[in-house]
Image (tube, rainbow over the protein chains, first blue to last red):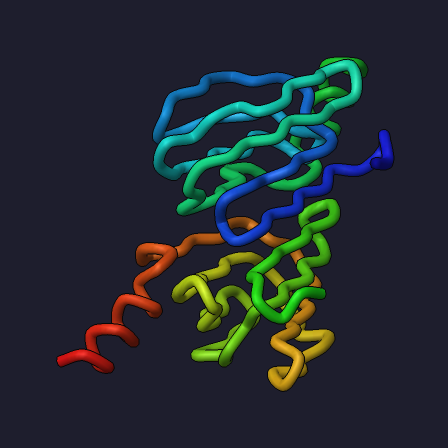
Length: 88
Length: 88
């Protein structure tokens, strides 16, 4: 794991390991939304289960059936937002 | 790499390594569709570039900006289809 990166690793659509997660916005059996270092990440699936959550480490592990992963924003949106707030 | 698995590994939404890919259905700068061992996989993004394609090994590496990954079917759809054909 690298603290400065957002990485994602999925095996057989059944196990999803994420690094670089900042917070869990919502979690349900069929959908989850996470805030990552590169913007929000929406996950859909079935029988989703959070196996590990360690936000100090930025790590989340989900199991279940993964159907989709979607980043609605630009990869550097957060950073730009941060700079906007910093210099406005 | 494990020949019997479909794995996916993404770093910073910029590099996507896939195993268990059977064919490339379509490829454009902003979208790609692959056939994997666990069904079709639709990828959207920007400036997508295929860095490696080795279907003997089931391996594809894409770079660019990844926005979404979507499996429209069931994970075992292919296998069920195969069994249906085999026993019908």
